[in-house]
Structure formats: C-alpha cells, structure tokens
Amino acid sequence: MQQLPVHLRYDAAECMSIEAASRARDPVYGCVGVISQLQQQIIDVQSELVKIKGKLAVHNAQQQLQLEDGERASEQQQDELLWLGSTQHDPLNLDQLLIQANDYQKSHF
Image 1 (cartoon, rainbow, N blue to C red):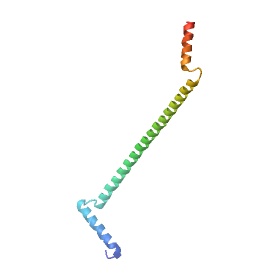
Image 2: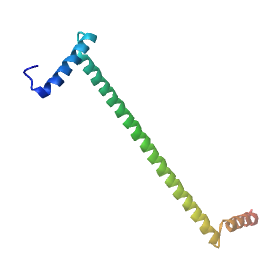
Image 3: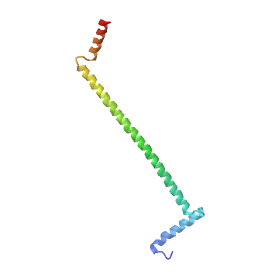
Image 4: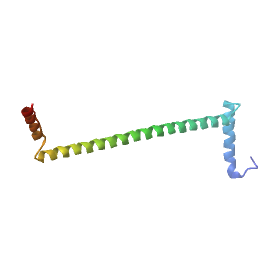
C-alpha cells in the first residue's frame, strides 16, 4: 500500500476490503464470482431487450398494415360514394335502368 500514491490508497484499501468480504462468502471465486453473475445478468437483459425490440417491430409493422388497410378501405368507400353520387345525376341512373330492365323482360318474355 505504501508503494501507491496517496490519492489511490483509499481506493486500494476499499478494493481489498471488498475482495476479503467476497472471499469470506465464496472462498473459491471471491469477487470473480460476483462479476460473473453480473455479466450473466447483463447478457440476459440484453437478450430480453433484443426480443422486446423484435416484438415491438412486429407490432409496429402490424399497426402500419392496419393503418394502410384502413386508408385503402376509406378510399374505396369514397370511390363508392362518388360513383353512387354520380349515378344520381346521370339521366340513366340505376332506378331507371332497373325499370327499363323489368319493362324489357315483361315485353319480351
């Protein structure tokens, strides 16, 4: 300890104290066992994060598809409304076409 600069002695003493306490709990691995456990926890959490990001990407893609499907359905409804609106102004609208078709059937059959 005396070979260390004064400003590093406290940190060195703290490290030795932690290692001694770790060796008392785990005589074989000491601090290395704790470090290994912490590294494994980091790996597990990173793996879980990757899975969650994947699920989130799938969810976002599904939401985008639903939004696009909704927009397509809305456009189709608008097209249908425009078509129906245009037939009401057409001199030969659907009602007239049906009447004419019925008249034709009556007169020819």
